[in-house]
Length: 238
Image (cartoon, rainbow, N blue to C red; front, side, top):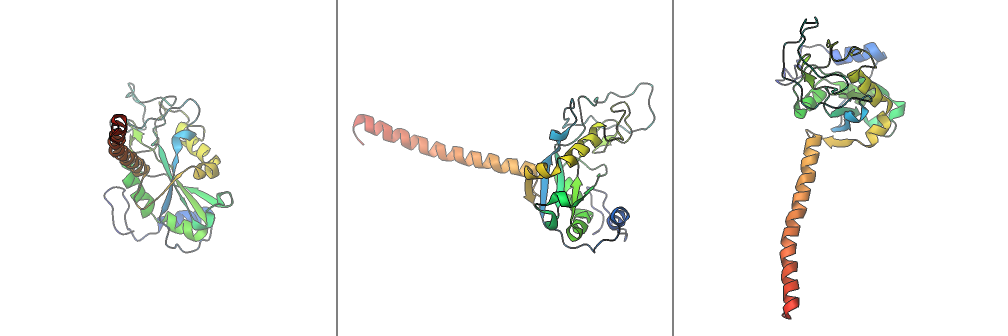
């Protein structure tokens, strides 16, 4: 919709792919309506399979290949890296607020999108899934991959048997994380950051840092005054 975007390979081709996918999965749907502005941000690293550690920085990009090389490029093992960004994004339609357990949940796996969270938000807001969710009481979960040197920057693990032999099953690192997140979704949403517009958890952290800096500034102004009063009291001039 709205023409191609530079970040996300979203194009207006005159074809409602999101609607076609959802109707294929759920049958008849109501027409999409305007989505609200709130997104839930869930820490998906908390749902990594046991023994897996997050990897916020992917390896340098190389051309991916599904064919095993006699001397494969080094890449992180599934025990050391999930190749996942920290935050998953969730759209909870108005009809599902406070009753997620009673709503259908749809998972959208992004394409090879760059790592800037603002561009991930543009993807989430550009493909009309949220609009269909709002009209049909759906919850849309957008897990976020970081990619690596083998599968590509911002990509899901689509061919790296060396990293994770079970990559295309629910016991693989990435899909296993999504599966665990879905199982814990109601509780995870209760602990999520709820942000509007183009805000991301980075902005939330910045706001907290700015608040702390403001408090520190106030203390810096108060402490000299307190010291002056204490000095005046000691000398009997107060």
